[in-house]
Amino acid sequence: MSTRPRTVVLLGAQRTDPSLGTTVAARGITGKFALVTAGWQEREPEDEELSAHLAGRTVNLRLHARAEEVFTGDPELSAAYRERQQRLSQRQDFYRIRLEHALDADYVIRQRRAPPHVLEEETTASIAAVRALDDWHLARCAEMHRAFEAEWDLKNRPSVRRQREQLGELLAGCEAIAIAGGHVATLVNRLTLFGIAELAGDKTLFAWSGGAMAITDRIVLFHDDPPQGPGASEVLDVGLGLASGVVALPAPEQRLRLDRQHRVTAMVRRFSPARCLALPARSHVTWHDGHPVHAEGVVALREDGGHETLVADAAGGPTA
Image (cartoon, rainbow, N blue to C red; front, side, top):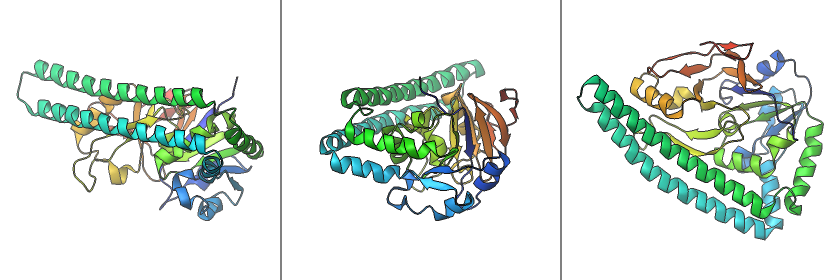
């Protein structure tokens, strides 16, 4: 039975106000870090600044480059992988079409005048319809990943197995893993391709931005005010499930309008019982054995449209 990380730390974005170094120091971690910067794609090797925050005690796992090596040396797998990604993209398009109509219906219903109990029933029904659509899409994504893994037996396929063995050797010399953000779809695909969740063992894991999203149960893309017009949050794919029961919302300063109570309420109802946690700069929350045990500056969204600072309980659960 494989061992998976018991302690996971989700942090706010690190680009302009880094807090990784102080958070790591507070946890007393002095050993080497394995870096994952695959979400930066071709910029993956440009990790000097990140490494400096960890006093140079780092080794970059080069997951993006390794994937390119696999695809170059194994054209059959490369073609199948590309085809799967195209089908996932098509699924996302169809899901998005249905989602936009469902969210539009929810908005219109909430603007109608009706007795409170009728309006409550109707808004509950419209959110239930959105939840069902999210769940259906997520299940299809998971099914496609399982089928691909079963058909191509990635764990034992020589081109992938060689890379996994090398990664296992690198990780054996590390005390912790740091996963940066970037292009979240690329990132979670590389993490999954190389089985990083299993190879990580019980090492402490630090993740932020897209990295934080990638290690939760499901990846939710969100932006309340995108340049192209009103934004609609959408489920992208399954995550690694290492921080369970949470929807990670990084960089809320740029992407969330916490003053729009109806949107906060809709998001919380939509993803309940998972907790929607906004991760502003310099915030962090520590997950241990599936529960938040320490938090600073993390914002928990509430069903009544409000929000509050998350106060985690060292005994194993949130108290606010």
